[in-house]
Image 1 (spheres, rainbow, N blue to C red):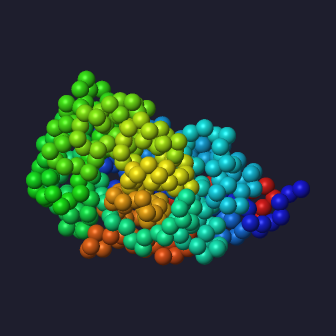
Image 2 (image 1 turned 135 degrees about the vertical axis):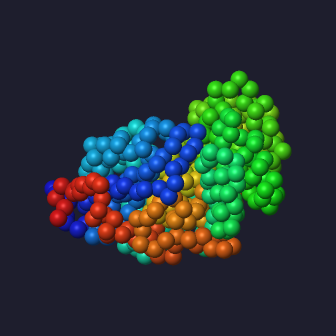
Image 3 (image 1 turned 30 degrees about the horizontal axis):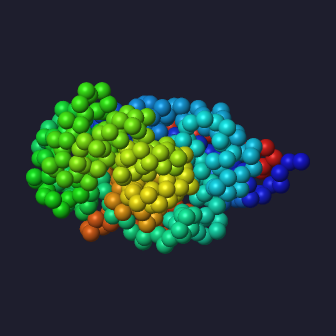
Length: 389
Ligand code: MG
């Protein structure tokens, strides 16, 4: 029997690829990104629309996912399974897609779209929903401290200019991208110029993996009083991180290694890190991200919310996630203006002068996608459930 029309199941999904010029190129140990194609997904659930974002990068350098592959896996495998499964809640999406291995960012975008539609229909904010899903149900914060990541620059002077601009804008935490040859000098220059009150940390994106003595190199950063060094070694090198953690004074944080709540538990058990960067798209969605939060909280490890150069859609969801209680370190939770010349949402997410960003107050993610952005998409396709109107 065909499903009834307008039942409260996912009736249709739209995948939208939009091209967004960056204000300036983004440079890390993984390479340089000059323009960003964002993959947005719209889910229609019982006549209510919700939006999600699949923030894979243009090339498979952060993880195996990349933009073209995300479009393909959505088109061929994920959206058909989602529509076939008759899913009616965000919490049902991961199970409907579980037969497909990998592609957590693609799955996360679909889950967020369905969750957003479900919550909009019920008049519930995403932050309140995620807080209610915690092992110890919590009250989400009304605003979260903003932090920003700054890519590798050509010179230390240019880096100091960029950090100075962000500190003036109110950011309370600055994360510097580092790599062998771009570490001790820029980090100590920023610490000297901005003093000990600035929460400073460094992200290596795995670039110290090939060195014979990463501890020798990274212990040179201990004097800078960093809050943590993030992902110095390879994604799968939990034991190596555990050994390194005993040889340097700066706490270690893991990013690329943490692909699930189970991996977070393993990393903390092995002493591979004492801080965890939670990125919902990297662990397959916001519901799994809450589980990562809970595992870390149970082990006394603080977490913070990382970013994947998201548009306002994913950024709003990250802000909701960062409002949970164990997010005690300011994350890569920033306003929408610094990255893209123009964002996809109708009302900007701004950092206030005290360095905070308000958790959106409307139901779902609380942000609206601009119709003109969708109309001007580089590529888009609608998918409908068999039997849906
Ligand atoms: Mg990172």
